[in-house]
Amino acid sequence: MSLSAAARRGRVVVVSLALFALAACGFNSVPTKQEAAKAKWADVEAAFQERANLVPNLAAVAKGAAEQEKSILVGVTEARAKATSINLTADDLNDPAKMQAFQQAQANLGQGISRLLASVEAYPDIKSNTNYQMLQSQLEGQENRIRIAIRDYNASVQDYNTTVRTFPTMIGARLRGASTMVPYKAVTPGADVAPSLEGKI
Image (tube, rainbow, N blue to C red; front, side):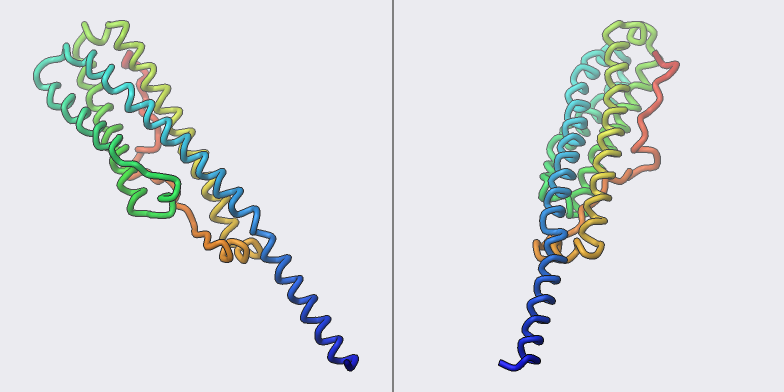
Protein backbone atom coordinates (compact mmCIF):
# COMPACT_ATOMS: atom_id res chain seq x y z
CA MET A 1 0.00 0.00 0.00
CA SER A 2 1.44 3.37 -0.96
CA LEU A 3 2.06 6.10 1.55
CA SER A 4 -0.57 8.37 -0.03
CA ALA A 5 -3.25 5.62 0.18
CA ALA A 6 -2.38 5.02 3.83
CA ALA A 7 -2.50 8.76 4.46
CA ARG A 8 -5.92 8.99 2.81
CA ARG A 9 -7.24 6.12 4.93
CA GLY A 10 -5.80 7.76 8.00
CA ARG A 11 -7.57 11.00 7.15
CA VAL A 12 -10.86 9.15 6.57
CA VAL A 13 -10.51 7.48 9.97
CA VAL A 14 -9.68 10.79 11.66
CA VAL A 15 -12.60 12.57 9.94
CA SER A 16 -14.95 9.70 10.83
CA LEU A 17 -13.85 9.80 14.45
CA ALA A 18 -14.27 13.59 14.52
CA LEU A 19 -17.78 13.35 13.10
CA PHE A 20 -18.66 10.63 15.59
CA ALA A 21 -17.29 12.74 18.44
CA LEU A 22 -19.35 15.72 17.28
CA ALA A 23 -22.48 13.61 17.01
CA ALA A 24 -21.87 12.14 20.44
CA CYS A 25 -21.85 15.66 21.90
CA GLY A 26 -25.62 15.74 21.88
CA PHE A 27 -26.34 12.06 21.98
CA ASN A 28 -26.57 11.94 25.78
CA SER A 29 -27.31 15.57 26.62
CA VAL A 30 -30.41 15.75 24.40
CA PRO A 31 -32.38 12.98 26.14
CA THR A 32 -31.19 14.20 29.54
CA LYS A 33 -32.57 17.68 28.89
CA GLN A 34 -35.72 16.26 27.31
CA GLU A 35 -36.41 14.19 30.42
CA ALA A 36 -35.78 17.24 32.61
CA ALA A 37 -38.36 19.22 30.60
CA LYS A 38 -40.85 16.34 30.85
CA ALA A 39 -40.36 16.25 34.63
CA LYS A 40 -41.05 19.98 34.81
CA TRP A 41 -44.20 19.42 32.73
CA ALA A 42 -45.34 16.87 35.31
CA ASP A 43 -45.00 19.63 37.93
CA VAL A 44 -47.19 21.92 35.80
CA GLU A 45 -49.85 19.22 35.45
CA ALA A 46 -49.77 18.52 39.19
CA ALA A 47 -50.20 22.22 40.00
CA PHE A 48 -53.19 22.52 37.66
CA GLN A 49 -54.71 19.34 39.11
CA GLU A 50 -54.36 20.67 42.65
CA ARG A 51 -56.21 23.83 41.56
CA ALA A 52 -58.95 21.72 39.95
CA ASN A 53 -59.25 19.76 43.20
CA LEU A 54 -60.08 22.99 45.06
CA VAL A 55 -63.03 23.81 42.77
CA PRO A 56 -65.57 21.49 44.48
CA ASN A 57 -64.74 23.17 47.82
CA LEU A 58 -65.21 26.58 46.24
CA ALA A 59 -68.48 25.42 44.74
CA ALA A 60 -69.71 24.22 48.14
CA VAL A 61 -68.93 27.56 49.76
CA ALA A 62 -70.41 29.56 46.87
CA LYS A 63 -73.74 27.73 47.02
CA GLY A 64 -74.86 30.28 49.58
CA ALA A 65 -74.66 33.03 46.98
CA ALA A 66 -77.66 34.44 45.18
CA GLU A 67 -79.25 32.84 42.13
CA GLN A 68 -77.32 34.90 39.57
CA GLU A 69 -74.02 33.42 40.83
CA LYS A 70 -75.31 29.92 40.15
CA SER A 71 -74.65 30.38 36.41
CA ILE A 72 -71.05 31.35 37.16
CA LEU A 73 -70.78 28.31 39.43
CA VAL A 74 -72.09 26.05 36.65
CA GLY A 75 -69.59 27.63 34.25
CA VAL A 76 -66.71 26.97 36.65
CA THR A 77 -67.82 23.38 37.13
CA GLU A 78 -68.01 22.85 33.37
CA ALA A 79 -64.62 24.54 32.84
CA ARG A 80 -63.12 22.26 35.49
CA ALA A 81 -64.55 19.19 33.76
CA LYS A 82 -63.09 20.31 30.42
CA ALA A 83 -59.71 21.24 31.92
CA THR A 84 -59.34 17.88 33.64
CA SER A 85 -60.50 15.94 30.58
CA ILE A 86 -57.67 17.17 28.35
CA ASN A 87 -54.77 14.82 28.86
CA LEU A 88 -51.48 16.11 27.53
CA THR A 89 -48.75 13.51 27.86
CA ALA A 90 -45.04 14.26 27.86
CA ASP A 91 -44.92 12.88 24.32
CA ASP A 92 -47.35 15.63 23.22
CA LEU A 93 -45.09 18.48 24.32
CA ASN A 94 -43.90 19.08 20.76
CA ASP A 95 -47.47 19.38 19.41
CA PRO A 96 -48.54 23.07 19.36
CA ALA A 97 -52.23 22.25 18.74
CA LYS A 98 -52.50 19.94 21.77
CA MET A 99 -50.62 22.42 23.93
CA GLN A 100 -52.93 25.22 22.78
CA ALA A 101 -56.04 23.19 23.67
CA PHE A 102 -54.65 22.45 27.14
CA GLN A 103 -53.66 26.09 27.71
CA GLN A 104 -57.09 27.35 26.62
CA ALA A 105 -58.93 24.93 28.91
CA GLN A 106 -56.78 25.95 31.88
CA ALA A 107 -57.22 29.65 31.09
CA ASN A 108 -61.00 29.22 30.96
CA LEU A 109 -60.99 27.52 34.36
CA GLY A 110 -58.79 30.26 35.84
CA GLN A 111 -61.06 32.99 34.50
CA GLY A 112 -64.15 31.20 35.82
CA ILE A 113 -62.63 30.90 39.29
CA SER A 114 -61.73 34.60 39.26
CA ARG A 115 -65.31 35.56 38.24
CA LEU A 116 -66.78 33.35 40.94
CA LEU A 117 -64.49 34.76 43.64
CA ALA A 118 -65.32 38.30 42.55
CA SER A 119 -69.08 37.65 42.60
CA VAL A 120 -69.00 35.99 46.02
CA GLU A 121 -67.29 39.07 47.44
CA ALA A 122 -70.70 40.81 47.41
CA TYR A 123 -71.98 38.47 50.13
CA PRO A 124 -70.71 39.43 53.62
CA ASP A 125 -71.86 36.14 55.15
CA ILE A 126 -69.81 34.15 52.67
CA LYS A 127 -66.91 36.57 52.63
CA SER A 128 -66.55 36.36 56.42
CA ASN A 129 -66.86 32.55 56.40
CA THR A 130 -63.64 31.02 57.72
CA ASN A 131 -63.83 28.20 55.18
CA TYR A 132 -64.15 30.70 52.35
CA GLN A 133 -61.19 32.73 53.61
CA MET A 134 -59.07 29.59 53.93
CA LEU A 135 -60.11 28.43 50.45
CA GLN A 136 -59.35 31.83 48.96
CA SER A 137 -55.88 31.68 50.52
CA GLN A 138 -55.35 28.17 49.15
CA LEU A 139 -56.38 29.28 45.66
CA GLU A 140 -54.00 32.24 45.79
CA GLY A 141 -51.16 29.95 46.86
CA GLN A 142 -52.04 27.47 44.15
CA GLU A 143 -52.04 30.15 41.46
CA ASN A 144 -48.54 31.11 42.58
CA ARG A 145 -47.41 27.45 42.42
CA ILE A 146 -48.84 27.20 38.90
CA ARG A 147 -46.97 30.33 37.85
CA ILE A 148 -43.68 28.98 39.27
CA ALA A 149 -44.20 25.53 37.69
CA ILE A 150 -44.86 27.13 34.29
CA ARG A 151 -41.79 29.37 34.62
CA ASP A 152 -39.61 26.34 35.51
CA TYR A 153 -41.07 24.30 32.64
CA ASN A 154 -40.48 27.09 30.13
CA ALA A 155 -36.86 27.50 31.31
CA SER A 156 -36.31 23.77 30.90
CA VAL A 157 -37.91 23.79 27.43
CA GLN A 158 -35.74 26.74 26.41
CA ASP A 159 -32.62 24.85 27.55
CA TYR A 160 -33.70 21.71 25.67
CA ASN A 161 -34.71 23.58 22.50
CA THR A 162 -31.40 25.45 22.49
CA THR A 163 -29.55 22.15 22.79
CA VAL A 164 -31.35 20.49 19.89
CA ARG A 165 -30.94 23.54 17.65
CA THR A 166 -27.27 24.44 18.23
CA PHE A 167 -24.08 22.94 16.88
CA PRO A 168 -22.63 20.40 17.67
CA THR A 169 -25.39 18.90 19.85
CA MET A 170 -27.88 19.28 17.01
CA ILE A 171 -26.08 16.43 15.23
CA GLY A 172 -26.82 14.02 18.06
CA ALA A 173 -30.35 15.41 18.32
CA ARG A 174 -31.00 14.75 14.64
CA LEU A 175 -29.62 11.23 14.94
CA ARG A 176 -32.12 10.65 17.75
CA GLY A 177 -34.96 12.27 15.81
CA ALA A 178 -35.43 14.91 18.52
CA SER A 179 -37.69 17.88 17.83
CA THR A 180 -38.30 21.08 19.75
CA MET A 181 -40.84 21.26 22.57
CA VAL A 182 -43.62 23.82 22.92
CA PRO A 183 -43.32 26.32 25.78
CA TYR A 184 -46.40 27.15 27.84
CA LYS A 185 -47.80 30.48 26.70
CA ALA A 186 -50.59 32.55 28.15
CA VAL A 187 -53.61 32.34 25.86
CA THR A 188 -55.15 35.46 27.34
CA PRO A 189 -53.30 38.57 28.48
CA GLY A 190 -52.15 38.09 32.06
CA ALA A 191 -53.25 34.46 32.28
CA ASP A 192 -49.75 33.46 33.34
CA VAL A 193 -49.84 35.84 36.33
CA ALA A 194 -51.53 34.84 39.56
CA PRO A 195 -54.57 36.99 40.32
CA SER A 196 -54.24 39.38 43.23
CA LEU A 197 -56.66 38.57 46.01
CA GLU A 198 -55.32 41.30 48.27
CA GLY A 199 -58.04 43.26 49.96
CA LYS A 200 -60.67 40.70 49.03
CA ILE A 201 -60.38 38.63 52.18
